[in-house]
Image (cartoon, rainbow, N blue to C red; front, side):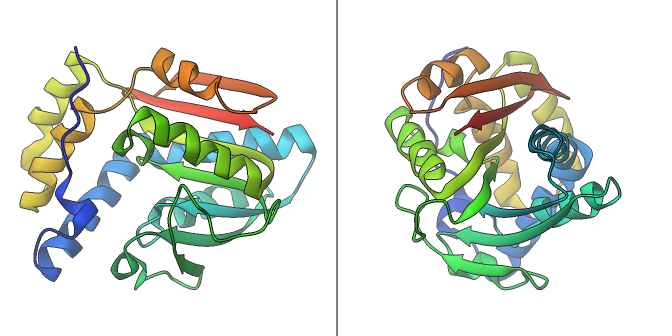
Length: 222
């Protein structure tokens, strides 16, 4: 199945405020039900164990309102790991309901932070929006800003995944989601494509694996 880049409506707030809010609720459901929170949580816990840390600062790139990092924080806290979260999104309107997290509007390929400002830089369902050269640039920026690792949680392009997405559309409220969910799978990368792009960064090591329901979970070690 060939990758096809399709602009997603939520990226440009191409809808009314109510439609955007409804689409963000749908996105939260997708991450809760289909491996978003569990994937990021498992990666964070792996890093914490590797470096023997019980407290980590995390920058979530393209965060929206921050559902995934905040749900992840609740999950990993039950395992004795505390997260100090900062949210970053290009669209400031997505950051309104940030539930106490710090929030910054900014560009993922030019992060407005100093070198090694956070332990971890993370993203969920973001890198598939970018062309290959921008994926590499974004991860390089993450490696610059992090002290330990970049965490990638994204979907995998596959015909069966696309069929499952179409079958699940009745679960969602927003017309934006009905467009964006299939578009995400069509323009997603395979795990091997992602590995090939990440080899062009200055990472010391890659831990990349398939996760639940066509998710990829990757730790890009600094």
